[in-house]
Length: 475
Image (cartoon, rainbow, N blue to C red):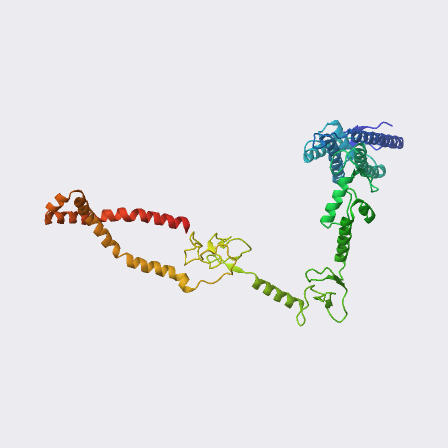
């Protein structure tokens, strides 16, 4: 029977044609299986193409270059990450592997860029496939194909992970001439765990000493990154000296006791004993040294009070012991721990004296400043409130001194402004001065009075400028 097909119309298939179609589908599945095996082999070859060159020493510092090896291992991880992401999105992993190889995509580029490019190519292939007017495949045949694709995606993910692990293990075997801690050649090779990681004896001893020093003794793992093996007590005892092992044993027992919720440590300074458990009738436990402890709050026993009330009382006493003052300007709380008594507010940057809370000036701690805190800049005295006479005495003294001096200033200035010309004439030419009449002397007096304001300005103005500049600088 001849099948005729026109645009938008398809004649039904005969039985012989149906058998021929099933045979073609079987051949297509076999071809897909062979292609999948080839892709697996190509991925296998791709992973194993990473050269395993041994690390070389760079210079006298015994540092080793890992750039090439790390770069190639990074390519494997990048490819595995892309294939895993493709599988999670529901795309064909083998098609992605084919695109990466045929399109020669550089994995050194950005990961997201490569992933987007692969997805774009897969969508193009699917659009081309959908646009083709090919034969329709029966659902019974699709049931056999889809699970196989899902299994193959999982297999290729497992395959990439396994190949990466084998590459890392082979690198470890190739680089067994170097210590994993100091990265130098072995001096005294030491291998004590089943993981077969080898280190210098001095390096592993220093590693254990450091762990004991910082009290990380519950589980001391192998120094090799990613290794899950741990050192037991017998191995540690053979690697460290007796003093270090005693510290290790002491710290480990203490850490194990700290994990026990029924253990309470003594709070008395200098006592390292503990109490385990409590009585059924009381929350108070007593140490061998005589210290009584509340089992619930782990503080000093507080008969007649609840734990919350005792804690509030403890905080109140602690706050009273702490000397806290408020900034005289912005009222921010300030606590002095150490240093001099010249304080600067952290909020408004106001400078004041910690002892008297007065505004700080350069002369505040001078020994001759009776209105400040003389010779107390580095004193450890407690802060005190300035008495009223100290606080306002300086202002009153300056006010009265100004009132007393101001009336004398004009007379002094007039005297010198008037008498200065006469004194000069008398000094340089006594004979001429004697011949001066009273009218001439009166003229000189009038000239002195007229020039008095000018002389006053020249005398006061420079000093006034200096006083203003001093106040701006030091206040």
